[in-house]
Image 1 (cartoon, rainbow, N blue to C red):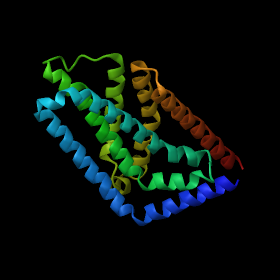
Image 2 (tube, rainbow, N blue to C red):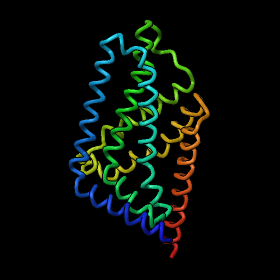
Image 3 (cartoon, helix red, strand yellow):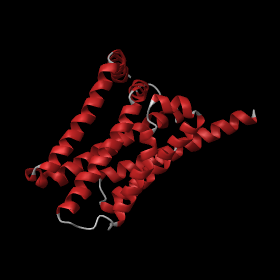
Length: 217
């Protein structure tokens, strides 16, 4: 209990500082997007970067996947009504949920460029030839596109309920991503994605049950 209390205090303190400097942190997100795009552009111009394409693509994919997990966690915590130590964590993630979501898409785009487009173009290969895991990766990327395009305040205010319905696509995308990851390789990323996808379903079922109980009273 003592350790948990201290941990909550530390996380709450971090939360206060993040809330205080959230504008500056948001700028760091956007500057990082510009930096990554510049790195990608430079990597296409110099042959010395070619041996790094695959490694850069893998790193972009891993960070993109982690970012996607982070966009789902606040909703799961809320629906499962998990509190205490997770309250400040959920608050922090909610503050930057939009930026984290944009990061997911930008990094996925860079992953696709470094891991597939550039290597195939370099050998004048067939861009329309896909392995099965690549098909699921492409589907998830296509489904993420409308979420990326509407990850802004204007869309939230003007689309209303349609915006919420549209962003529920993430419940389906997580399973497509799981197939993309596990077909390519059974690793810890596949296990964590499956765990989060399963928690998503459990939390949605629990929320539905709670809603039905309230309506029946």
